Figure 1 (cartoon, rainbow, N blue to C red):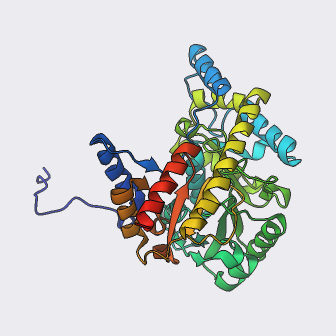
Figure 2: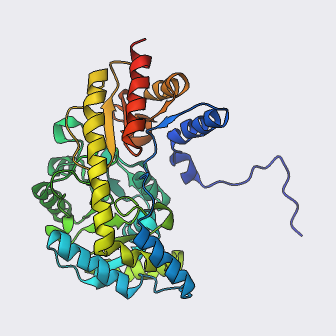
Figure 3: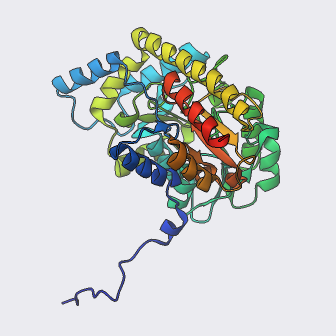
Length: 395
């Protein structure tokens, strides 16, 4: 009989957990909620979630799916009808033909990234993401015992990787590079020629390019090019969360190189069994003309918010070198006010009642000099937030 564990022996933890950082903004959000519970009013510009509800046609389809009993498992790669609908979306919006067999429906873009890293990485393999960038990307690499070797980027390259970055950083352990377009936290877009050059640099070295396109659709002034328009050899990840307004439904997809589809299917069946059946049936309505009209109205609203907040922040003294083309973020240089963006964000919350995200959540490169503003709240609240910031910065 095994002896009972004594208090002198700690419970085991995987070593990787020491390398997976929490979202620092969650501490700020918890404090904001506590302030609100105590009667304070907080303007939220920290949350990367659309404030619009799921469009009604999608809700109707979801309710109908439940009424019809669509609550069981689906194929691990998703409903065939949804994979075909996603392929049709690429044809209509981008003029790109995608074989539905290359599309794998996933439990959110996070599920997609786990699958991609699972089929790509052996222990010790390296992936090259940009810094600043979405932090979970490097954490998914670590989850599969890889190493995220972040490459510092700044306004001189629109906060995006270029082929020259890969040429300088790629070594014998590197298997992939990752970009986001539009990017979180900067909202910048990778153009077609740049995508082509990045893919070429990765493939020449025996690796692949992974492109996060979850903010596609939320682009202001023409569409962002999809990596699928230049290659079938990259992994392209998208989601129903941002443009389609289905965050809590947890549904995304991968368009994968044909050579990886079988492995993705096998891994998805082992990790997830399948994506949510009701969510998939609801998502079929996301591509209807009725839903598209709603989503385009929302895109216009986000653009209006960006066009208000960008000059307002500049007038306050924040430095924003360019106008981001997509997503719903502004990544602002706050060095005129502080050399500690986390402490600055705490003070802004406590003293001004405005919640923002410190740059430390997005990497290490000049993180203490930047904060992210999310325009995921209405114009009236954004205006209130700007007024509060003005009083805080200019007492």
